Amino acid sequence: MITYLWIALGSALGGMARFGLAGAASRALGDGFPWGTLLVNVIGSFVIGFTATLTGPGGRLLAGAEARLFVMAGLCGGFTTFSAFSLQTLVLIREGEMARAGANVAASVALCLISVWLGHLAAAALNR
Image (cartoon, rainbow, N blue to C red; front, side):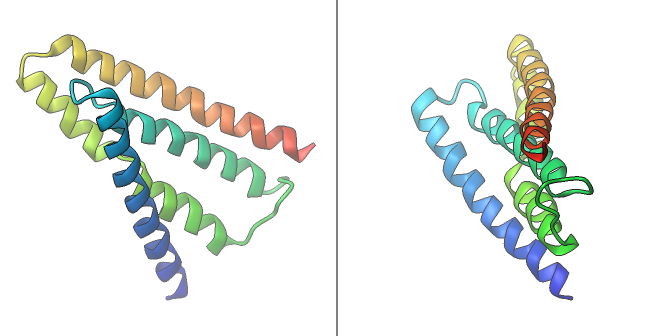
């Protein structure tokens, strides 16, 4: 049961961080493109790649299952916004903004894959 509480706490903290960061990005960059969602997904991808590599088997900071679940399932799960990404992309499509929808999909997939890879590389370098 304690594992679920750690995940719930991480999810709550991640959700609050997402709300704050997405709002700040929207205020700074405007509402014409879902910059906040893209930003949190890229950051979340980096964090989950970094954590998985740094704290996993062979990592420099071997962490227990509950600590890994707190960060990867809780914080990252509450922070990243794939469902929001999907809805915002659908809204862009329904509004006839096919180029923006395509840009959102392409940028999200490419940048998040690059970000998870960079997180992995950063942690792998620390593991040496």
